[in-house]
Image (cartoon, rainbow, N blue to C red):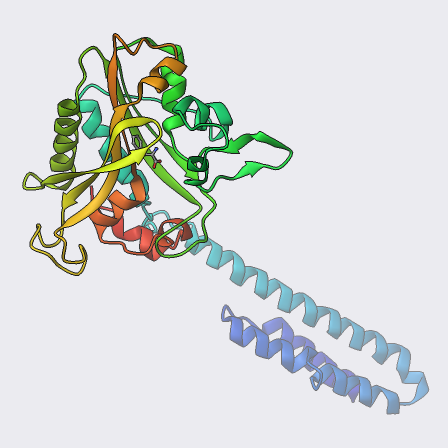
Length: 339
Ligand code: PHE
């Protein structure tokens, strides 16, 4: 009799108990699966005499409902017990990942530290500049090819507005608003229209410095930079100044330090010269002082500027600039304990 069989199944469902998800799933398949007992019963149902159908049909539906209820009941018990395990307050916590500073930030901080020991303040200015602060006030003549020296990003609709190509613009702003003595460094992001490669990038970082007072001489500049080089790269570091040209300084120089790898003997890194170029510098051109209403007959000053990426490269031995901008965690994680 079908009724007896169904009652047997009902009993079986009633008795079934489990906390094992796999067992519960097998139970579900046994009754409710495509080839399960319920589908068998529905097939059988088609063959029974008409008068038995109402009673048996009702019973099969009851069986189906009970099977569903049982499966849901057991499943929800399993998920609430596993939740209880997560809430176990005696469980040890997950270890917390600590971040690290970017090598450019570390280097900038170190440069700022060194110059603040010499009494330099830190000044900042806008990254979107005007022609005056980036070029004209710095003695770049109008239409002079020197403006091409630094491939500039101009704003098409207003060529008076540009992305600063150096943070010398910040120093112009300082000179305009302050009277000497001025002793300041300006760290910041600068922009030049360069194709991105291992050795060049269209965005990079600089720290430029300015010192203006009575009787500031080239000897002061040299001593300041020697102090910086020794603090940054170690006490045995030597410096070398080579004549150079910048519109805003006269005389101008480029500074090399003795090679951080071979100490001056000559190796692959310094191309067997023993020296590595790290910054530009010079005595502030009297025209620049005048542009900012500082009397060049009373005051003199020096200025210098360096790329933070370059210093970081020598400090950490990173020889591809692109690493600094890719934010690859396996690269960034290496600087955790460096400075
Ligand atoms: N402004 C120059 C540059 O960006 C660097 C510099 C600063 C040179 C101050 C001399 C004096 O290349």
